[in-house]
Amino acid sequence: MRTSVITGLNQNERELFATLDPKRLPHHIAIIMDGNGRWAKKRHLPRVAGHKRGVEAVRGTAETAARIGIPWLTLYAFSVENWKRRPKTEVAFLMRLLQTYLKSEVSTFNDNNIRLEYIGRRHELPSEVQDVMQWAQDATAKNTGMVLTLALNYGARSELADAFNSILDAAAKNGGLEHLRKQLIDEETIGKHLYTSHLPDPDLVIRTSGEMRLSNFLLWQLAYSEIYVTETLWPDFDGKHLLEALRDFQKRERRFGGLTEHTA
Ligand code: IPE
Ligand code: IPE
Ligand code: MG
Image 1 (cartoon, helix red, strand yellow):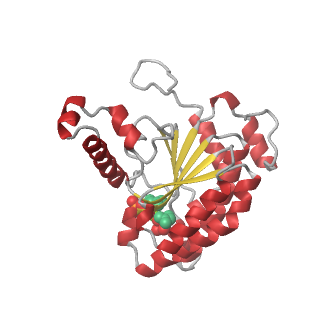
Image 2: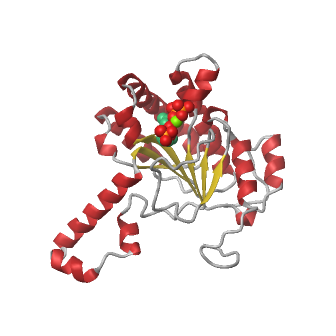
Image 3: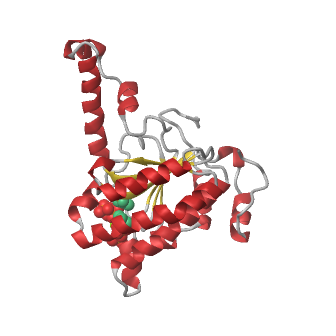
């Protein structure tokens, strides 16, 4: 619930939050967390050092988002392309880091009433990683505040392919393909078969480290999202940067194809 007195924010965050209209905060924020490798390179450190610091940025961002009452936060943590195209040693490090992060973070999630969920082809991840993911999800399942969704082994094109196959499966169970032909696939049907069927579309997508691309993230769901790109590298991102993005968001005029401002 949003209240005018927010606990847990630092001085900087409180000042920034005071400049925002609490009634016009985005419901769903999606973040493409990028720049861990560049952060490390700037410091002559191995790439994995950037990933380690990146985890701390996740904590700060998720805490602030929960404290100001954002209902849904979705973080792009690991793509299907990362899985295929990065050196095996880096992928193995990221898998270990994910397990350590989830084990240590459950208490932060519970302290902030955050419920953890995932999107992506989790069944393709190593079984020990899947076990920790399930454990952390179960441990936060009763929380009623912000839903934090981690996109892991996620790709928007794989998601759409999975959705279309799921529509075919449902049709096969429900009278076969003849039935499907008559029924016509519409936008609502596709939305219901995506991994995000239980989530509203993001109002705002943030990408760190300056790249102007979506990198196969939520291609369907971002159709009318506001895009905010910051030069800040992900390990440097914190609650203050999140609030700056929200200030920028509140200056935007969302039209959804109309001539004047329109709310979704
Ligand atoms: C983002 O940082 C983290 C993941 C994709 C896992 P990168 O590792 O992509 O960092 P850069 O883009 O090389 O700086
Ligand atoms: C996007 O970052 C993917 C994640 C944040 C998980 P990448 O670093 O993988 O994207 P590209 O390769 O720069 O497009
Ligand atoms: Mg990158």
